[in-house]
Length: 102
Image (tube, rainbow, N blue to C red; front, side):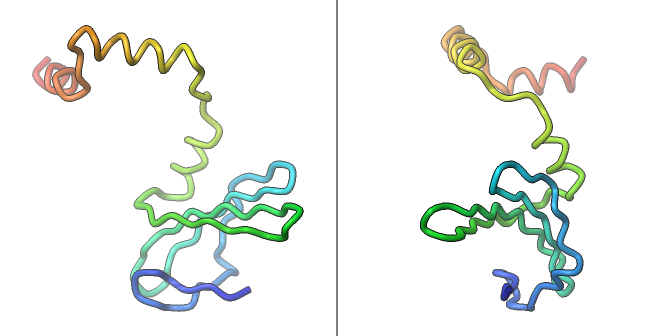
């Protein structure tokens, strides 16, 4: 397998690749560039047309990605509730400021 950091071009050390989750024929991984410390989250999937891979540069650690991956899923009602909250004039920023001032 060939792979290099999208930021500095250094080849990855796949011995340090963290497999965070496996489901059916899909694998979630996390690897950190040994040169510039850029982290990449990747999803590898095997389907009828072969293997596909998608990657994302992130500042999350492998542990943080694992926590998010194993967390609760967002359901339809969560989206509807959040939309109603925004319609009532609520914003994330004002709520964060209020929490900081409390």
